[in-house]
Image 1 (cartoon, rainbow, N blue to C red):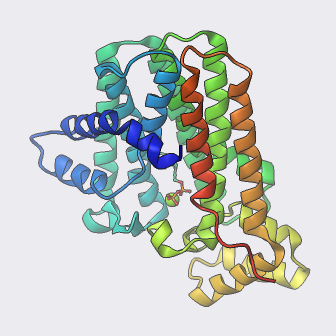
Image 2 (image 1 turned 120 degrees about the vertical axis):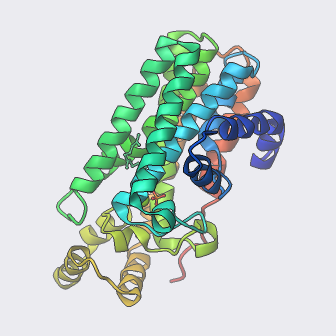
Length: 333
Ligand code: FPP
Ligand code: MG
């Protein structure tokens, strides 16, 4: 079984999620469905809804309307974070398309993000499961902290690897982990099963974002849906750049400091950084760290008994997909 078999097995449920996503942003204010359709039809892996579905099944329940609504909740929160993040970062291209902020302006991007969050809250209120509501609210709080930390520490090279991992945990792993936890809560799982799902989601989410950070340097435009080097141009000091900086001599460090401080780096600057990174194997270092987190993610599930253990394979294959999908050719030297 590979990842395409996983999505094939969940095809009908994912189609129901897709329908719920479209249905729940209906509004008589035309800009809301207009922008939401643009965003939701513009790609996206639906990784978080898929994890809700996999973990519900692992917990032994069938996918009912409640599970579909909750899968929709996590996708809405994710979409809202991207709408807000692209404003903060002034990003112009995402998933191969012009961003909403670039096409409609920042106000529209922020406000439609707010609409999706309010719809997510309404969907949660409909089922009124306090443990699920608390898990999602907590994840949203941590996620926003991650967004704010990234923004306040942009263009700074005096951060530690631990700081980078903390931001990665908050901005990405928190909602991924809540998606896994949500599956368990929908299944009325034991605290041990719930904690295992949370741990899996945390490690999986960190690995997911680290792969993304490595690919932002090493990936090609087709795979990324945006030109490589976006983090560098936006002044985000992610792990590959921090690794390179720590391995550089004084002259190179000064050059990197200038690039990071300067809001107007060129393609040539990026290419210089990329070739230094290849020499120092910085993307590889980041990917290896991602791999080690994914090993921990799998281990978190292995010592716990689940009602429907055949779905462990679905979780593991999804984990492998995150790592393998992105693996570029090894560096030549
Ligand atoms: C994308 O990371 C950014 C995030 C996952 C989160 C940022 C959080 C906020 C802006 C707070 C908003 C929160 C809510 C609940 C609306 P990235 O920049 O590494 O990914 P990218 O390359 O796809 O932009
Ligand atoms: Mg961004």
